[in-house]
Image (cartoon, rainbow, N blue to C red; front, top):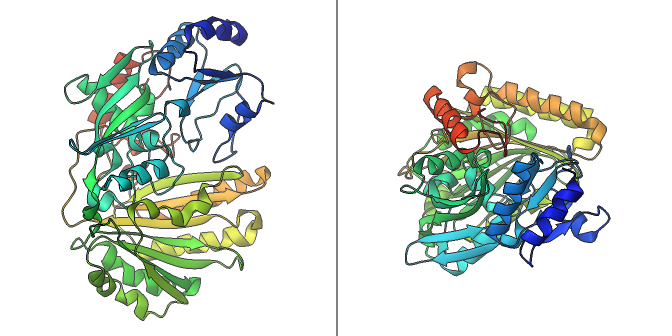
Length: 460
């Protein structure tokens, strides 16, 4: 079936509020096509914007019947949410809805709601939950992938906050999944949801703002800036802090070259959820080193993501990858520093790139649910954020990214490598979904829920 015939077949079946864009010159088409990164961006034959869950089910049912490929789009950050002709995009933003239920301590999130939208709504209700570190990240795909953030220290991973999901299946059926209804599907979507259906709505646990350390949800945040030649002594100070489980902390060690000087520097950005006086004591050794600049603040729950808004800009060429490590080794990170310095000296176009270590520690371990996600025991991650302007520099920039990853993994057994599934689908499945039993179960569930690979070919 041609895409034009497909569209003609679907139009009378969809709600009056649904929209279909077919002309690439149309403003609506172009708006829907905007992405966080232009790496491998493709132009689909059409973009469908359903206005009801029933619309989604109908579109999937007909597309599956006629073997027309499609991808769903939420926040537009995923490198896999783009497709070329004859495929189409299923844009979920018209389904957006947030419903806070304080009595049951949950929030319902539907469609393509973004992190900043959820954080603002929850703050007004005096609640919080695990949300992404980036304001424009789609809430639902973030939760389905596992969900690491600064708040992991006190609330846990985002996938562990899911109490129920509404899912559009490969045959067009819309089902609810929770611990009692379709429990195997519920297990699978928490950590690998994109491979089993399109999740239209999630119910998430919420917590009082006070878990962040104060009644209003503010917490202590510091910034310590050093020249790169101070990296070894800074890391030596941080090693015991990153292993200290007496406090709820999180933070990052960032290699960056920000404007206007564009000089590479080391930025330590710790967070402390608790008494600010204790934060000052814990991080005093960073101050004692005599940083080039330092400051502190007390951001509220809905404000803590604002610091990296610059990295949420749409367009350009960006790659984002996360690899987990069991412990932080200063010697390995110093090799990452050398790779980063060489990247900047070799490719000025990659100046906005940054490599960083992010960590979290927790006094009382948050509740971990049974799920497809397998990395709750990883508390330290290397984040390689590559950003460049000229497409021809891709291979060069990616080579440096791979070298940085190899450096942080030095002396680690390959069998223990950890890749975050939502950022690296190309890595071996064993690294993304650790454990033979878990992978076997995922493959069995794929045969049950999506045997034809309507959503992806993963686990088939």
